[in-house]
Amino acid sequence: MKVAIIGAGIGGLVCAVSLALEGHEVEVFEKEAGPGGKARRIAVSGTEIDAGPTVFTMRDVFDDVFAHAGERLEDHVILTKAEVLARHAWNDSEHLDLFADQQRSENAIGQFAGAKAAAEFRSFSQTAARAYAVLEDSFMRASKPSTPLALSWRIGLGRLSDQLAIRPFSSLWNVLGRHFSDPRLQQLFGRYATYCGSSPFEAPGTLSLVAHLEQRGVWLIDGGIHALAKALQALGEKHGVRYHFQASVDAILTHAAHGTPALSLANGERIGCDKIVANCDPNALARGCFGPKASKSVAPTPERERSLSALVWLAEAQTSGFALTHHNVMFSPDYIDEFQDIAEGKPPADPSIYICALDRDAGSGVELATGRERLQIIVNAPANGDTHEYSAEEKDQCTRAMMRSAQRCGLRLEDPLPHHLLTPNAFETLSPSTGGAIYGRASHGWAASFRRQAARTKIPWLYCAGGATHPGAGVPMAALSGLQAARSLMEDRASTPRFHPAATAGGMSMQSAKTASTP
Image 1 (tube, rainbow, N blue to C red):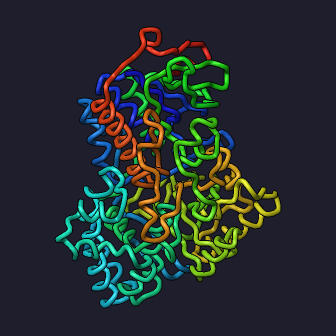
Image 2: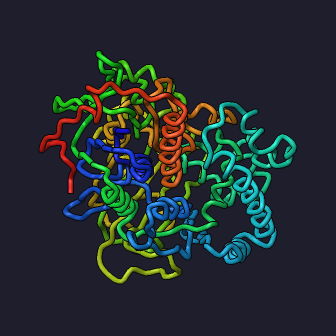
Image 3: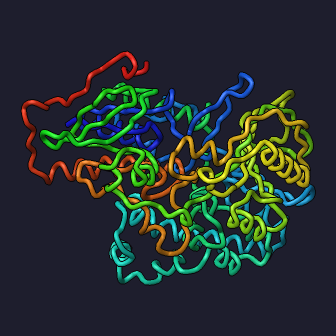
């Protein structure tokens, strides 16, 4: 069977490997110059800087992908387990580290906010671990449940206490308010809603499980998540996957004569196949980015249900003051105002900021040796990249607001800051028809998970993968979506009688220098 995959993001790369290992002929078509999708690197003044996801969890998902191919992940990328999960700050005197060692985190919280807070953290950690245990196999690693009842069946109708433990009907903010009496800790753990592009005031309490996901382990990859993407590409090539870069797909078609699917490329080529996997935001399909046929395959995402976008500064600069580790978060003084600004369609005036100090490890060390360092700095923003053009003046205002937040917490950034700024406009260009929403549909309300696109679409030969599909956003979730797409495709093939007219056996691919596999 010949499968065409649109997009070489993490979901598409994992799907390609999985299908190739089952003996299928797989070709991947990517409009960018290399693999990774959002896990890309951008050159800023000649220096390559990670411009996508930086947090790597659920390592076992990728261990399994490589093990299935008879390989070891650690033979393809250099991994280091983080000692410090993240360093947090509210001002220049209130700093808190969370550690891979949960007891160290508990002790640190006790020193930061008192014995009561340490006990509250211990209780919260147990709740988060339980939520993760309930949903890991029933939801995250399984096909999308069609209804709440279907999920209840998987969990077990007799396990009512487990179903209530995931807190689907309370907001994460309210759940955290019942756990933590210190508002700083409520804000710290509320940030986990932004991991899937959502507001802690609207996301369900279920997202408390992200705290346990990190507690299970955060790893640093030498070369960043982009290095993982390149390792997956190499693994696919070893097993026969062909990759075509700078090969933009204009349309998904059906062959008029015999109804088999095909891709129409921007260079005029037509690629015949048996199945197609779209590793993109499903809204791109729904809004006609791949032609009228594909627009009928999935439901569109309403603008009001888009996830967050972001302002992302990529810089190589000198820093001083605050002792950066690899992952750092500096909180705004008023979280409610911050998310209200975003809800009103404007960047926050006084934002929280995340800083990935790419050249620092995640140990207890506090100082970089000397010189300049690479930084990725993120501020949450509305997904309005298709309706609002960020002017030079507005970009400068956002930069000034970000630098004020850093300075409030004791971090002095080189001023003027040499940087490249990605706005929601840039993310809309990367993922059309999303407004720059980085995480697909927002996880707002108890029913959000059931509205997320599944691997199967309304067209029997077209499947979806990627962080905007089930089970959701994030590097491991995107990988799980790729596995789900491959599994669904193979299950459907096994249960459907096969008939291929002799004229189309082997497909219709016509190779050219422009779409030939990139070495």
